[in-house]
Amino acid sequence: MTARLSPGDTAPDFTLSDDEGDRVSLSGLRGQKVIVYFYPAAMTPGCTTQACDFSDNISSLRREGYEVLGISPDSPEKLAAFREKDGLTIRLLSDPEKAVMNEYGAFGEKKLYGKTVEGVLRSTVVVDEEGKVSHAWYNVKATGHVAKLRRDLGLD
Image (cartoon, rainbow, N blue to C red; front, side):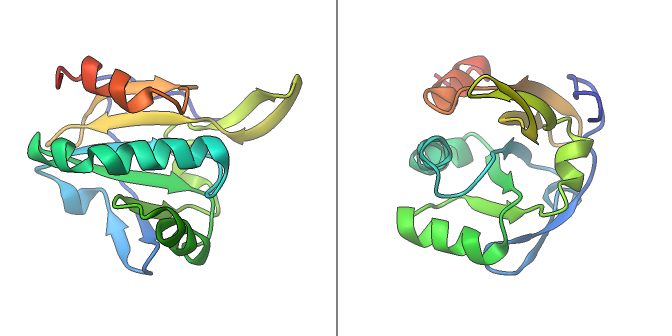
C-alpha cells in the first residue's frame, strides 16, 4: 500500500473508464474542486448507501463548485448496472487493477468480520482547483459520510 495522501500533496493524476465507457482524467477537471471517493463494490449495502448519499447531494455540491467521482474495482458494465438500479447521478469510474487506489493509499490491509484482509479502504480525497489535496479521510463510514464531509468543508 502506498502512503496515505495529506493536505498539500499533489493529487496523483489518473485516467479511468466510467460506467458509459468514456475516459475520465483528473487533470481534465483542473480548475474544479473534485471529491474522489473510493468504495469496495457496487451494489453492496454500504456502497449503495454512500453512492445514493452522494447522488442526493450532487446538485448542492456542484453549486459549491465540487464534482464527485466514485472509484471502485468494478467493471464499467457493473457500474452501469449500479447506476441504473439505484438511479445514481454521480460519475462512477472503474479501477480493476486498483492502480489509482494504490496511488491514493485507498487499498491495503483492513479488518473484515474480525479477519485481516487486503481490500479497498473506504476513503475520500478532496482535490482543489490546482490539483492539490485539500482534505483526505481514510476508513470512513458509509452512513453519514457526506454530511460529515459537508461539515468539514464548511458547506453547512
